[in-house]
Image (tube, rainbow, N blue to C red):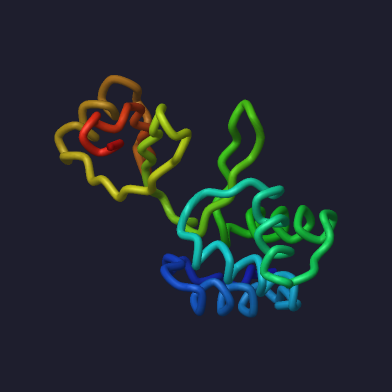
Length: 149
């Protein structure tokens, strides 16, 4: 039996995310749409609690369980990003391979698309014997004092 190929086109918009749900046969419920809309509007990484609080503050009543179940379903299908941290999971709207800048002042995570030089990737492959197909980099740092004024 042959598996149906699912589009690997990167999800770059709310419309792309909704389309991927439909392609995968996921029902786009009212709650699921609320969560996706919020992640695309916020354009930052949020905890399930922050998502729950923001949606309810906007008058979009949704339960804790519904938030957690939808986040799990969306992240497990690669529609949204889930970052595991020691203080819990954070969810973001970019699901394709990308890197992060972690601000140690604000605890904020910024998405960044970085392409490493081909020579560097080949060097890693030579040293490890592993063919690199994708990568992510985590940068850590502090905002400069002039940015925080």
